[in-house]
Image (spheres, rainbow, N blue to C red):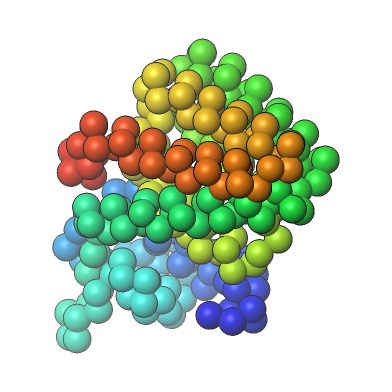
Length: 228
């Protein structure tokens, strides 16, 4: 994927096709559509208030992502992420998040640091109140700022996609006071390394943050999580 493709993906979400694609993908990843379920162009089109054409185009794009299988003369069928898919995503993320934090150390602005400080503060408050939906939103924002601070379009694109793919898993794993509090402490440690502009420390902590997330997932049971 070259730079043009990354920019196209960024702007595509604002087009009709992009909005339809993102909505169907969200519905698959959130569990609205189950594995093996048929996706009918006319039904989805009616739900979204669009013609069948952007739906058909979105399904073809989703097939390239491995979330849909188009069967000749039958239509599109959902292919949910497997346990191995999730494990692979986290294994790759653990490496890329570390690299992203390292690069962010070199480019992060004072404004971005202040935004991260505010997120850590708000996350502590939300965790104490058991506001887990808000915790997930703040977690997204924390990582998004670091992705932007890395100043790498390629890395940001890959990590945002991976983050989105495991949104359902992250939502469940963050829905406990213990993990929510630990996650925020890990974020604070990463932030401290960024403030010190210590790339080795930031990379180590970001890498470890994902590994600790994986350990938490394994304790809960990934297969059980995917069935919820």
